[in-house]
Amino acid sequence: MAEPGLVVSGVWKSFGAEPVLRGADLTVPRGSLTAVLGPSGCGKTTLLRVVAGFERLDAGTVTVGGRLVADPSRQLSPERRHIGFVPQEGALFPHLSVEANVAFGLRRGERRSGRVQEVLDLVGLGGLGSRMPHELSGGQQQRVAVARALAPRPALVLLDEPFSALDAELRGELRADVRAALAADGATGVLVTHDRTEALSTADVVAVLRNGRVVQAAPPAVLYRQPVDLGVARFVGDVVVLPGSTTVDGVWTALGHLPVSGPTAPPGTPVRVLLRPEQVRLGEEDGAVATVSSQVFTGADSRVTVRLTGPDGDREIVVRERSADRSPGAVVRVGVVGAARIYPVDGERTPASAGTRVGDGNCAAG
Image 1 (spheres, rainbow, N blue to C red):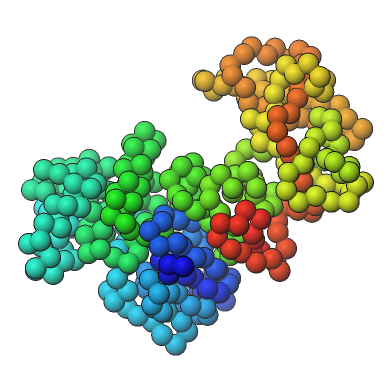
Image 2: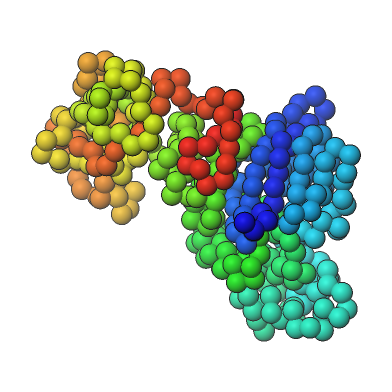
């Protein structure tokens, strides 16, 4: 089996008395792009800075390309780790041309090898090497920063929210091009982001960081469809959560009896039932009866809030559907497509004793 590109094992990092990383574990396959996803303050940037060597860890180890670069007694300097770093704002040298910025970290012989032009072509900037940074758009400047990080053929490229300052359309275009450039160069990458769309659409593996620990790391589709707990489910997408009671072959809810995928529980167990909004459909002939509370038009589709009546009282859920007109007060039928997932009543977060493995849809570390 090939050596992973990056292994972070049991890493702790505190600033003063407050731990920011609390035993973080992460394995990044060589040649892949892993996104570290989490809210502000969860430790994403600190994790990246520890890997890069900008911060000294308190406990644990960091291994890059099979080489130990950090533990409590060993701290390789950033320039000796063979890591490329792309900051949020690009941080180009304003007095150097595009070509000189990209060549900055290369030895003299490497500068004459054609590598600079190769990486400029990879990021879509062929022919712009003589321009100065102020002559480029924000998106082009970020492409230069990526090219500069790739130029020395590093063992690992770290990207710290590099698209956050760009508008939505340019973000989508640039992240696709950067993903393609990393893949074409065979680079191993770690992208830090708080944008779930960016993470799910760009990365091979998405690692969700919460309170300084990786709670789940899995391919995007697995993470979305098989979240380890309701906290992860809410963070990576919109949810419909209902109370339920398990049966021999499924679960009873206000939307009727539903099949279940993934872990189950003994019949009669109270649970919380997870559905994604796209699984809930209006107009199903045999669906549960509901009343429309409101509709919000969002363009290609609408968000319709409907009120269900069940044994535990009324409950409102939000359904996403193609833009049909749903008048408040209208009576509709609500059905479900596909299987639900169930969680313990207190299953917002995974137990702290769970472990984590990249690629395992049911993995966690709390």
